[in-house]
Image (cartoon, rainbow, N blue to C red; front, side, top):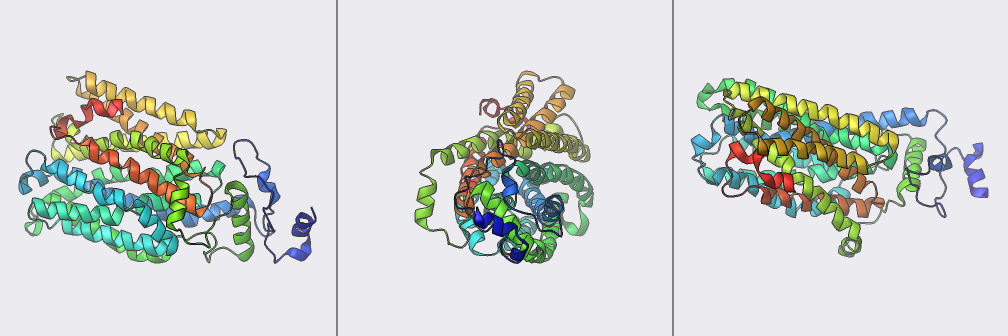
Length: 448
């Protein structure tokens, strides 16, 4: 008791706000709203203002980073509409192989990437990766044959492997569990914004077809990759680090943020590097394995939509430009739906039902695509349901899993495992006999 009284006394103004969390049980945001009162906010600010300050320094930059990463990853679908497969001779399964090879390094290097991120400053590692996948995207616009496309897609996977789990890991080290879902969903909704923005951008860039002797699909890769490289230079200075490392918090604010997170999540173990034994201990928990399967079940239909929806829309008889424009509304609807669900999930402090409901929405969309074949308006409406369902449930599942992993070690390893294992589903998704125009109707998405 005396140490808590000491912490509240004026004489301890320059000491840590929370002198110890020894004996304090882990905080459960679903049942104990009074736990944050165990630490005292610095007198010059309020907790709400401090969280807003953190939001402005963390979330926007991570969102832009992942928007560009996802855009560079899936713009091959937009490029394909403008003739990539025709010019490079991607017959039979070659286009699908170009999609699948991206996920080989993406899966293998998830956990090593998060270990490196923890060792280096996040802004250093993530900005290096960002420049790397921007450069590879530019080179993708210069390939002359199938083997060149495979090589660039492989290295794109190498550099993008750290983006998603690294950002989710970093967000989890800044926010308490009951605050996290809106931030996770807003970050993850960068994918839906990238889908919408990518369609608009591709419709404009496609008009450059023939300029300087390059086809329109080449300009999509070149310009979008150039944009990523330019942004990466600024992000080397702007991307956030861990709470204990940033310079834009005062000492009192930094102590307060770390103390409230220790009560919510346990000790961070930031000061000790991850060892192989730590990885083994994390995987002794069966819930870690379950988290990977949870993500696996949604990644298959989600990326089936991302890679093949432009081809599905084009099969309705639209021109290349109209196809890109018609791909925008489903992504925009998914963004709005995801943020609405995230708000209610945080408000009610509940996750399970907010996973199940969007999944049911996606199932309804796939059921329509499977059963309806002669009504393009209804099929187009079904694409809305698929996008809204998949891209709303995914951030809830990842947030639910990550925010129940206490400390740097478990979260770094667990978040990378979940994303890495889930991405195996992407490589299994594309069968040899799948035609892009029919990929969205494949019953495997509905079953998984």
